[in-house]
Image 1: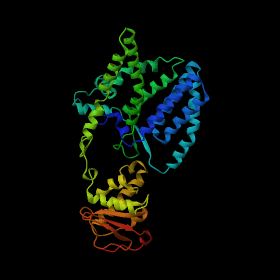
Image 2: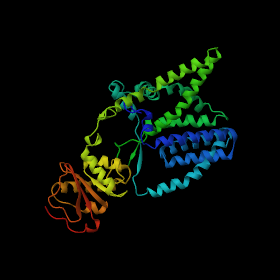
Image 3: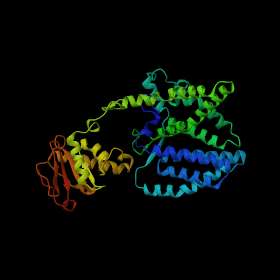
Image 4: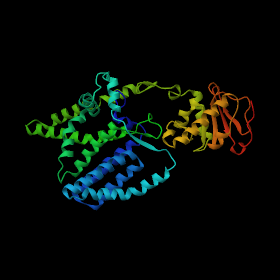
Length: 416
């Protein structure tokens, strides 16, 4: 979604839930196709179940496909008196309502997500990278030059399917319900990404989730691009060209035009000290033997779910290599209300500030139910006096780990 950054397939190679989400999305679309063709209740149920299952895997993908399905259902009911899509949309809504309600009630006191109108965010980034920002400033230049450049560069080979997408969207017929759903899915995803910012409340400059809608649109846009390639293949074969060579030529050309971003990404990933061309902090690079020995101790001594309060250099390996929790993680700001996050963040900063001055405050340890405190001797240091509620259970040349006896936290921490 950004030039010279990460390709659309990036999330598929890592642990992002988009990977199973793509499988459920296309499985649901396949079942929808079979239902529209055969009018079988089994395919109707399967398509609705698969779309609802997306809510448990990738909520933004579920919202995207349900929005597209709902809009198409209304259009086809009004224009063609065709209720097939409406049946799918209604059953999907009925099956999904309990999940939506449970998510809403479960996150009632959690983090809130805000959607704000913020056009040109990604286009502006593209112009900045290409050195065009100072030259393309007017509305005409943005919409007539910068936006097409962005879309062509963003879609890549998929751009050949744009005419078919627009035709399916603006010239629907009674038999093209699925094509209308797919076309609307592609277009509305791009519109949302290019006009909106979706972030946790109070964090306008944090991770923008609207980018996922364009990523999802690009997955589905491949259907129209492949359709164009199939049409080209049939046209050439009809002229007497042997099928084998032309099929190979089209396949090789399609791969050559669609993988440069992926090749570039993995070329950058070969550098263990950089991610997407940006330098990694030392704690995110290869871990030292001392760090790994701390993690090995926590893996053996701690129970799954125990809370570890790690120093800065131990946060990443604790999250990645153990089954322990931490009071404040990398994406905590999006999981809880802003007030709760700010309170926890302040408490943790005050704890480490006091720790470095030789005082152990027990407020955070009680409130977060901390079981272990893992510190760097060089960065956080070790207070001269440790309260009885903490006992040192591990130490090496760089780190020390203290175990917290929560039943003793009511005792007053000793003064330095």
